[in-house]
Length: 271
Image: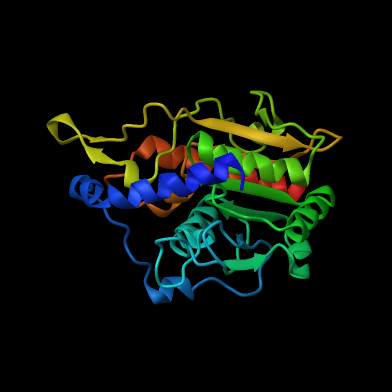
């Protein structure tokens, strides 16, 4: 087992032990998505939000401590997708369809220009999955990874990328990257916290104390300079989509998350 993976096991165990203390400080809860909202998106459309299914480090798709059979790939599903679709319909003329999820080894993956994977500090990709991901990306696909934190989780993700692309570096997105300007000109880089990070600060203000976990927008490119993988590191963009209508969630983070979402989407469909 890689050192990074061993540290992830230890970190999760520590979080479980501290759970009671954390819950005592936590003031905000995710709201359930009504069934009618889940069924409201059309089955036939020009764009679909595709979430990647994967086996995680803690079992056969059943996340350690998750319960109810929910693996880590299902974090924020389907609320993130539902709110994402509402934002796309409001801000664009794109015909967005129902949210879907497929494993990398499913041939249907090649039908979609965009795929999304969350909690990639916990995934445990097989050789078949890394081979398929490489093929998908080199054939024009676009992957967004999100909601992983700290050096231990970075090591797990980085090791998987070395297996996918041993000769392609992970780099910081340059300010002049076309993806950052395809629709919105993104210049400010406000950190995007998860709902779990929010606390009540002095005077009742909502704060997100995230010292020691600076945000990074990173990427992997192909030989022609096309972004193949967009990496949201030390951020939870999915929560910002999901919590867009929560008054307590920071507006600056939600606004940035949707600007990135629209740029990612348009970039994936045009590059």
